[in-house]
Amino acid sequence: MIIVCDLDRTLIPNGKEEYDNSLGEFYEIFNKNKDITLVYATGRNLELFKKAEKEYPIKKPDFFVGAVGTEVYINENNELVEDPDWDSYVKERHPNWNREEIIDYVNENFSEISDDFYLQDKSVQNKNKISYYLKDEDKSEEIISKIENYINEKNILAEAVYSFDPHKDLGLLDILPKYATKLGAVQFLIKRLGEEKDDVIYCGDSGNDLLPLTSGIKSVLVKNAREDVKEKALKIIAEKNVDRERLYIAKGNGRLNGNYSSGVIEGLDYFGIS
Image 1 (cartoon, rainbow, N blue to C red):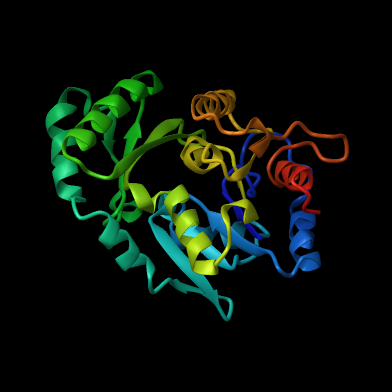
Image 2: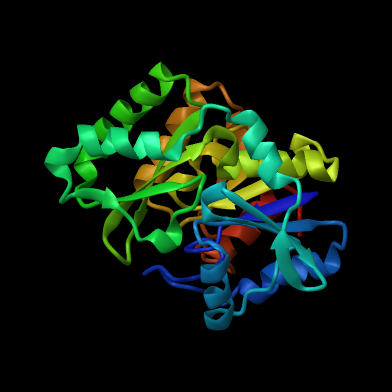
């Protein structure tokens, strides 16, 4: 069994909603079930994860999927080291990926809104991740549609992934190789570990979790997820004819309030893990 969890506002209680101190109970599940592999899948890169380790009582996972799915690390002797097979896995599947060409397209076609839509800091970019800030969320659908049309016309296997950072009050748009998203990395780990799709539970809260949440993998959306994310998830699974029972949206059940790790525990219990 593989349990995959987003960090910020999923396991890490860094949102405005109430936290019920349930993180310790979450880790108890792994103490009781030694055959479960724990994976974090997060927008944070490895350096930002190390900062989170200092700020919150989170434990190292068995595997770390960082930078919105573009990095994969293995826990070796309590140190996270790069997975030796990941880079070649991504390269083989994306012969048309050209980071600079995509950036040039954005520069040429969105110059009139460059004050609202602009590249994030170099520290969060990498060879498989092009990350932008967006000030006006109302423009997100139009921007994503144009970028998707471009990558389809060029036969580029890529995804435009949108989420929102409430701390910065900014939209986050990542353009990623199709198989270097959170879902792509989870699929890579399923193969690597010799597991089946049915042996995975994915837990998240934000727009960059939508690909795995709506893929047919057993999934959990924590209660504190934005309402628009919940609505989009339900709409997508209906359009894709995914079994509704495979997506659990936490509600809180008295003892657990459903937010953050509490919602994860509630969802795992729904899927028979306790």
